[in-house]
Image (cartoon, rainbow, N blue to C red):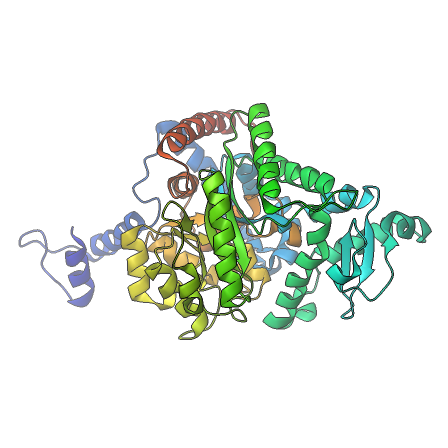
Length: 506
């Protein structure tokens, strides 16, 4: 039955189809349900006999968890804020499955918030020489250098090691320290009642941690941990958004951004040699969207130089920060005009609840500027022409469910527009954005919400497999790199399917 016939079926009672025969009510009903299922993401993904068996097992667990949540709303992780749902998710059979499942790539991840806050506290904060100071607004700044003019600090610099030693309880000190770089609260609705309050705290955390990460020994340790956390969560590749801050060492020397890129490149080479089934990372240069046009123009020039030195590593450019408060993309057209033809744009677009404002109009400009992917695209569902263009041009939307929830766009993720994107088979990849800032790690937590909240109840392994494959398909890996990536993904996926059937996953 064609889509036109299905439409007629719903518009005109008792429409004749298949010659002169009429469909029964039940046949017509099933035809529409089947058509919807085939239209959605994963509808045409093939499952082998073994994969179908795993899907049966998976669906038994999924429907069981959803039924429990239906009976008891306080236990319905799929509908709860992540801060309230995390203990439930951690005990979930579905989550155990997702942790061990090969997830392909994460294509939207900010380096400063990519590592778990607990690791930062237990490791970076114990590095010799870490200092803390306080700005006039009361925000703490962590660093390994004494530069008051750099940090706008009003207080003296205090050694973190001494502050911890002098505290009543070092363990309580570490818990309070972690709050500097973690949004978690048991009552997010009370602590962050507005989008402005949560974004202010969120953006502050980048300033709290940023200079400490730029200390060369900390930079190396931090980004190695980033790779470890991705690898341990069965992610095989990542495209990292970073401003490539200038690094410094213990002697006070500051290095140009070329050194930052070289350090990332060297770490990537070393990690992939140790883990041949990990394809590594590529870099998207990220610049604050609140800057003026001249500053953005200079950033494009600097990016161009970095890109020319490592064109297959420094692959793209983006503007970051709160879209509602940043300058519209249209403002920067003159600065973006001289962009190198061998590089790509990866614009954040439509990370907003507004409709018909300059913020969601960023989606239009991103498309006109030929963006390779769209970061978040939360408002895209309100723009049917743009949505159709995204689907026709196969421009993937980087959907980050937990980020959109924590940063106040949606409370119940079953209401996330990503559900519509899945239903319409809009190109889409699941991303984690800033997991270290809200008690997450890797990509599995966002996959949990993707399959339990955004997806329909009857969606299982077919959809999960499609999303994993999408992450490679819509990456910037070269043709040769993609070929190798799919080979590794096929192999690790096959091994995973075997483990599930052997009873080693659930």
